Length: 166
Image 1 (spheres, helix red, strand yellow):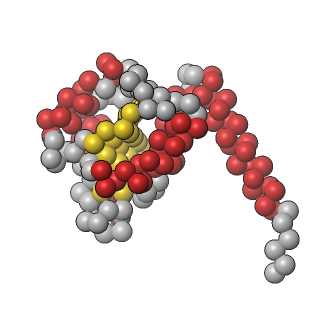
Image 2 (cartoon, rainbow, N blue to C red):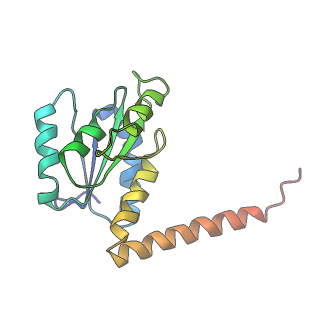
């Protein structure tokens, strides 16, 4: 649920990343976590990126999910400007090499600037990871994450009993 009082900020360098990053929003909504979605380009709006990152905590944001394709500077630059946890989502974009260049740009951060990184186009896992982080101190969210995990387990067990007639 998008909110004026977000706990999670989902940012991306371009609106072309939205089809991927929407999956993070869907997971956060599943756990009833307030979020916002913003376009914050490290290259096209560097001053906005700096102010966004420096002000996020004072606005009540607890976790930032940053998606980026190509050179993928956004997650690391934001992480260098805030003490909040940043989860990077490498996006396979029109100017990326199957998303691998973005993955390497995000995962290979210098010592002292951590960015948790999920798989290429792994925004759904970024949303779940943000919920798990918030769940460390919010019992309601943790219980929703535990219920989600139980549903996943039950779904696999049901499928394991199917007769595949191989």
